[in-house]
Image 1 (cartoon, rainbow, N blue to C red):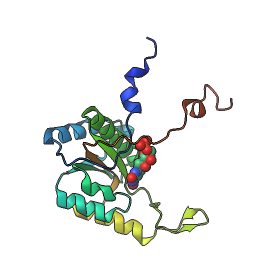
Image 2 (spheres, rainbow, N blue to C red):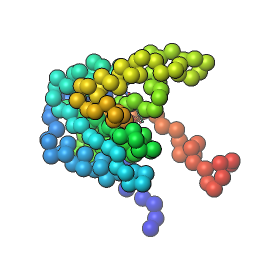
Image 3 (spheres, protein in one colour):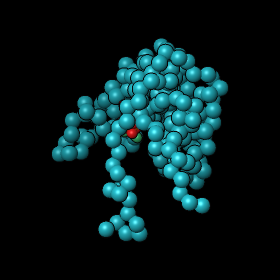
Length: 193
Ligand SMILES: Cc1cc2nc3c(=O)[nH]c(=O)nc-3n(C[C@H](O)[C@H](O)[C@H](O)COP(=O)(O)O)c2cc1C
């Protein structure tokens, strides 16, 4: 079989979009996005995830108010919060794979989306956190506050970690973030060219 870039064109077209039309998403579509998410690969097939689908405007507004980098959640038709049990060693990778499945599945339904960062490991890097010689300072209160609050809003158990929130909606926006070129990032057999 020879290469046919048209096959992957839809993947290359996916971009993070943060403005949405005032148009609801059918519940069955949202269900199918989670169904696609749960099929993602996980280390040792542990499937440490839980998915909270949010389409209640009041809850979306609360999340937007809480998450400094996700203010636009308030305008989304829906969002899916991906949470993972921290007891599993690769929970961040597992939850990330599920997140990307949601984004790809959403594209297949002509939905636009944006991955909004969750809380990972002992540090949560964001602009409000002071840096100590280039690395985030030891667990600032904001980390705990943000993650606790996000979980409180959706009534999730505290031993889960928020891996991501994916905002979803129909949109006219066609913003295309720049990508590094294939030549620049790809290496054959050995890194050195
Ligand atoms: C782990 C991760 C966390 C992200 N967190 C945020 C976020 O909190 N807020 C946001 O607006 N975008 C977030 N993004 C989206 C990126 O900003 C976006 O992917 C990047 O700018 C490239 O743009 P593109 O997705 O349109 O190609 C996140 C993406 C990833 C993979």
